[in-house]
Image 1 (tube, helix red, strand yellow):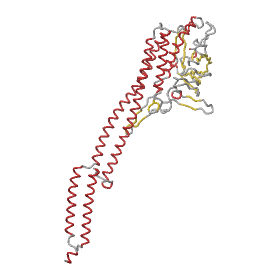
Image 2 (cartoon, one colour):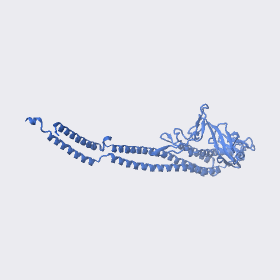
Image 3 (cartoon, helix red, strand yellow):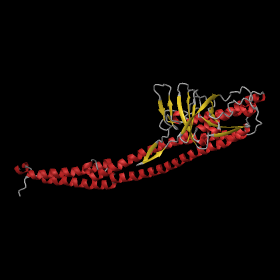
Length: 446
C-alpha cells in the first residue's frame, strides 16, 4: 500500500490529538480531584455517584428532622418537669394545711399560692415551640387553656358518664352523690338523662348555686341536700350535678348531661381540645369539634417515623383543674360558711373540715402526678430512641460519605504519576512528528 504525505499528516494529527486529549483528561482529574467529569466518561461510576449522593442527601434531611424533633421534645420535657414541680408544690401546701387550726391569714396565703401555681400551670399547658403550641396536636395555632376571659363564644356539650365517674362525697353528716362537670358558671338549661337497660329516662333538673341558702334550717332544700328521686340538683356556679342514689342503680349503663357554656375565664380548658362539642355562637352556622388525639410524626429514617408531641388533654385533665378549683373554693368560702352555720343561716350538715379536704387532696394530687409521670416516661423513651437514631444517622453519613469519596474522588498520587507518563508520551509524539515532517518541498528544490 502506498503511504502518501497526506496520510502521514492525518495520522500524526490524530495521534497528537489523542495524546492531548488524554493529557487534558488527566489534568482535569488533577484540577477537580474527580475521576470523571461527565457521565459518559464512566457510566458505572456516574450511576453509583448519583445513588451515593442521594443517600447522603437523605441522611442530612433525616438529621435535620431529628434535630427539630429533639427540640420539640426538649420543649415538651421542660414543660412536663415544670408541671411536676407545680403539682409537687400544691401537694406540699396540702400537707402543710391538713390541720384544722389554720388561721384566716394562713388560709388566705394558701389560696393565693394555689392561684399563682394554677396560673403557672396554665402557662406550661400553653407552651409553644417556634410559634406552635406543643400540647394541642395538629391544632398548633390554638392554646390548650384559656389564659384570658372569653365571652364571645358559646359551646354546646353533650357529655356521657359511666358508673365509675360518679363520686360519693361526705361533708360532715351529709353524704351525697355527684358528677362534676368540666366547667363552672354554666348557662341555664342543663338536661340530664340516665340509661338503664337501654331505657333512657330524663330526670327533672333543679338549677341552683352552691352558695344558695335554705329558706329554713330544716327545710332540706340547700344545694348539697339530697334531691328527691327523679330529680337532680345542678349547681351552675361550681358545675356539680347532685343525684339521688335511687336514680343510679347498679345496672346503670350511661348518664348523658347536656349543657351550654359561654363565659369562659382564665384557666378554663378549651373544649375543642377535650370534648366532642359544637360551637353555637352563630346558630345558623354551628361548628362541630372532635377531641384532639393527633400524633405529630417526623420521618427520621427510611419508612421510620417517631411521634414528637405529647397531648395536653392527657396531662392537664379536667379532673385536675376541677380538684384545684374546688380546693380553692372550699378554702375561700370556709370562713363565711362557718359564720353562717354559727348564725343559723346554714344547716349543720354544711359544715366542712378543711383538714379532711386537704388530706383527700393529697391522694388526688398523687394520682395526677402518677398520670404526669406516665406521660413523662413515654416522652423519655421516645427521646432515648431518637438519640439512638441520631447516632445511627451520623454513622451512616460517615459510611456513605466514604463510599461516595471512594467512588468519585481521584487518587492524587496515582493521577500525578499518570500525568507524568502521559506528558512524556505527548512530548515524545511531538519530537517524532517534528522529525517526520522535517523534509519539505524546499528541501527537494535545494
